[in-house]
Image (tube, rainbow, N blue to C red; front, side, top):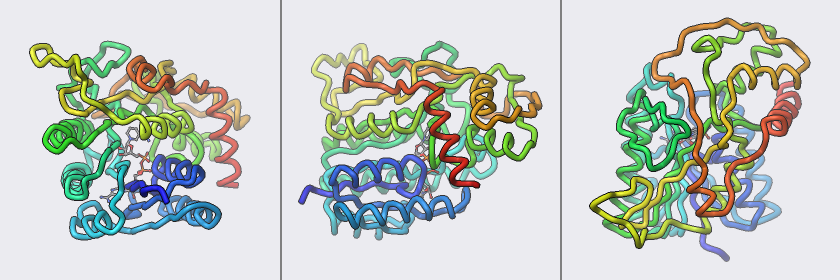
Amino acid sequence: MNKPILVTGCAGFIGFHICKKLLENGFNVIGIDNINNYYDINLKNKRLAILSKLHLKNQTWNFYKTDLINKDKLFEIFKEYNPETVINLAAQAGVRYSLENPSAYINSNIVGFSNILECCRSSKVKRLLYASSSSVYGGNTKIPFSENDPVNHPVSLYAATKRSNELMAHTYSHLYKLSCIGLRLFTVYGPWGRPDMAPMIFADAIINKKPIKVFNHGNMSRSFTFIDDVIQNIFDLMQKPAVIDQNFNCKYPNPSTSFAPNMILNIGNSESINLEKFISYLETEFGINAIKEYEETQKGDVNDTQADDSLLKNWIGDSPKTPLSIGIKSFADWYKNYYF
Ligand SMILES: NC(=O)c1ccc[n+]([C@@H]2O[C@H](COP(=O)([O-])OP(=O)(O)OC[C@H]3O[C@@H](n4cnc5c(N)ncnc54)[C@H](O)[C@@H]3O)[C@@H](O)[C@H]2O)c1
């Protein structure tokens, strides 16, 4: 029996897909999620139902409904299973909601993440992969966003918590030799996606013939990144953990590597797509024209994101590359099947 992999946020969009991939590849998986009601919990429960069916055919799947805040329970789970690898995806996600409910971000993303680090330390976990976000690039306008760029100007509390995670992970990596990779994820979309994110909001609006709010009057672009690419990259990174950068120079510190086994990597499609173009692909798939309402940029949002994928490519020989035409078709097919 291989050592189990512990995945937090397993009922979430990305967590579900990574657990599915791991179970399909014969890994034993422990999933943790508090199934919070930030969005429709039916979607989360349906994802979990798929995972629990998969394990009948394959390896062991153990799910715990618990909160990262519950340190005692977390310690109990880590002690019981002694995971070698931890993939931490549980977090309060979403930029805009961080203006409404900041404490949710402090609780899950700061306190919860510090509990994960403590559990990793006490159970001598070998490697931790955790979700950071492209939002850490904040007010930067140098495109594409590189891991070597300074990231000291976040424009939302969400981004600040994700940047804090990167700094906290580095400390544990240095002090306890915990190999850590921070995944700076760029706008992930695809089947079983998040209802609070633009692709699902747009799809709902188009289907129901309701107006789509197009922020910054359409002058927005994103490195829209297809879920299958993200999952393949995480899967490969799991098998190629961070190592000490032997050429690291403390006089001229490279922000993306370290004297500790710690790395930060962009996980994003290097092509940045204008929001209106993204909408037009959805219109084609659904055969309906969108009704658009142009508005100002929302507080906390950044106008453009674009991933520099060269470090990821150098490390694992791959990076997200699914074209929008293919990714959107897969998303729209799932959407029609799920909602109709
Ligand atoms: N989807 C994206 O485009 C994107 C982009 C950048 C970063 N991220 C990050 O990737 C990770 C996964 O994102 P996602 O899109 O799958 O989000 P998601 O909201 O679908 O999944 C997160 C899951 O974590 C659970 N959760 C939240 N707080 C918890 C807590 N305190 N204890 C236990 N479980 C908790 C939620 O119930 C949810 O099922 C998050 O950390 C998110 O911030 C996602």
